[in-house]
Image 1: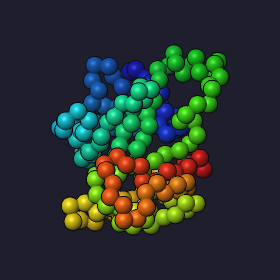
Image 2: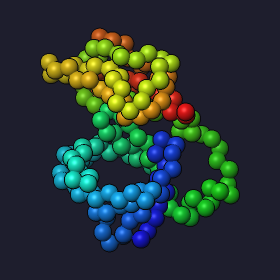
Image 3: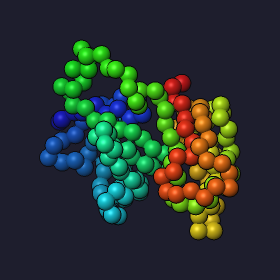
Length: 174
């Protein structure tokens, strides 16, 4: 078994996998069976994770971090092997961008931002309603996939938005 360290929105997870078979991954001791079902273009994928359908968008930013967009939430992922992790113990990080505990909600599709259910300073938990987005004459309720505090509302109600437009910033340091 190979192991790597995943930093996802400033939280650390240990992932174990067999280099010859990537279908089974253990994260913090929990086993996930993963099967790629379909690839749509360069960045949209459909997976079966423990026999449940998951559709995610993957984007690599210039700093070589991976952004996973799932149900409208962006998860910034940094992958480190055991050597990199050991070096970090001895070399003090500079505390640059990404170390501030922020997460953002991006629009999963183009449309019109109809309504916010939260305001700056509100504490939200997983499953709480965040906003309503109208797309193709249907109103879609966007729910939180994280626990944190709303830091900033980036778009006003009634504004047309593009896919991946930042809608809400969260502080996830709780």
